[in-house]
Length: 277
Image (cartoon, rainbow, N blue to C red; front, side):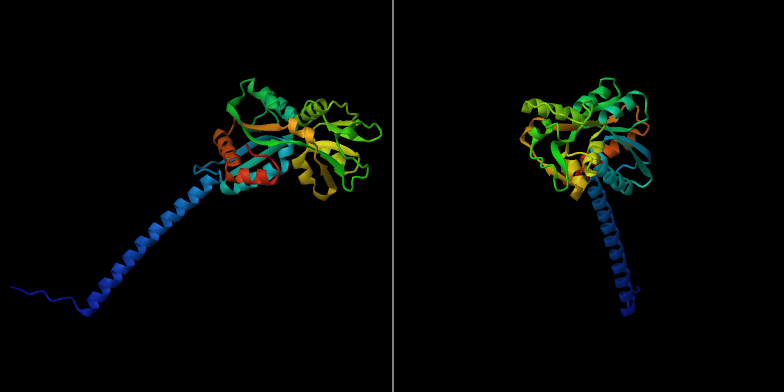
């Protein structure tokens, strides 16, 4: 009968080292898996989703979304390498007509349900639009308010130079509602094609006052001053967002919408002055 010798001290040391190495590799692998899971969870929470999307994504969006959506587009591209978000910013009614005319579009973000309805009534939307933000009008005057504008009633003064959005675009339709609610008849000198063109008139000092969204006043910074007025409460605009039924990049369209509706989108839109539903 042979008797097994106990392992030598050197052997026992080698066994202990090997065991420790195996344990370290196991813990490292688990930690890596947990980190990957955490990154995925964070991307999903931010609205990026875990699915891979690639290619071009065409987004038609109301002019008042220019700065915020441009920022979100850059964030989206960083979260989804291989994607390129291309924007067309204009008055919502103009964008709706382009979509109806056959423009290849993945996502439409309008500044009012009425302009969105132009698209949905034609059966061009994929599902029901989602209201993702709200906005309200504010009086915009050049820095220093040289004309001394103080309220909505000043828009009836024919001695002042006044700019309004064209009535067919959402900011113009909202302006009509506030003047009707106030029982006032404005005396505008110019109607502009969208809210950004209206804002530009104020920034350049070409008009004494204009009605634009409060988010646009914030974007203008020190070149423009904003004056709130109570009648704006009766003309709050809902902004709906939808993917198009014939979207060239349907997966990309849904991923971008999820991103806007997620934490990243809500943070950026809220910081820009939009009301979140």
